Length: 151
Image (tube, rainbow, N blue to C red):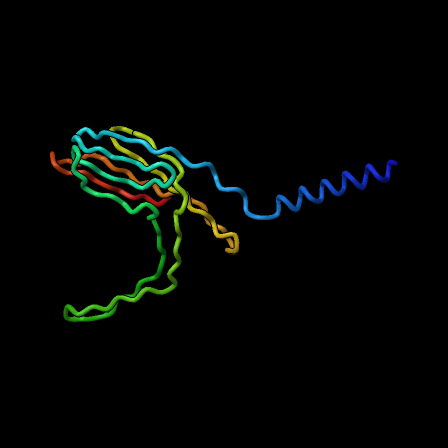
């Protein structure tokens, strides 16, 4: 009887390990929202995707595609040329895609949207990070500044 109970526990543990062997489930979707900037610009962040739209009243000023996400590229650049004719070459280009809408908030009069880097499980050294999109009123009356920071 003891052997049968031990076999049942062993089988349950094996199936638990089998269930854990794979990619973790995706995080729950993030609710979007709206931020009104001091210059009257409305920033609308879409539910789940983090797509950003800017409006002046009802007039659309800018809208990111629903599934567009920030991409950071690192590379070595070589510049050659003389007399105003230049040639630029990139080598060792590595792409980092911030594919997961993580959060948004209103901070110091700006809309801040965060996208998380989804590490490549097959990479030798997985990289983690967050890209922060900040939308704030500009220095001049009719300007809005959009800044993307890669952390």
